[in-house]
Image (cartoon, rainbow, N blue to C red):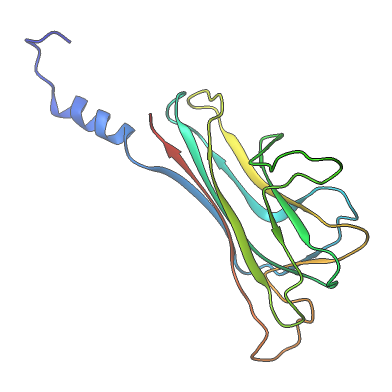
Length: 173
């Protein structure tokens, strides 16, 4: 437009609509999973989101929190963030240690610890092309991982039923 052209109400509305927040969230509340990854990475069931970015130069703010427990005090749960098929937000490599985004542990028989990570991702995006974010987990040997419940899971008032979340927000640049 030239400096003599005035903005129309439609063009102003279209511009403002493009700037509305682009947020997607997966909240895992009513599924109480027991998984046994046996030393391989597996998807945390029902905890993935697809975001269709509005702009190609955006950053993506990922907030993940998982409530988990295991049936062994010797082994913790490892979690990692994944964008499409790319691992993101990993700790530094060091020897044979397993890189991950955050951990969960053995909180005892009647608890489910909540742990998570916030991460600002700077991917190569194509506006209008969906990108999928998800969480994966693993654990050493044959230890069971329990999501949103304690491992004993008896019907008693001290047994928790927490929530796990994955929230993805497009940050316009």
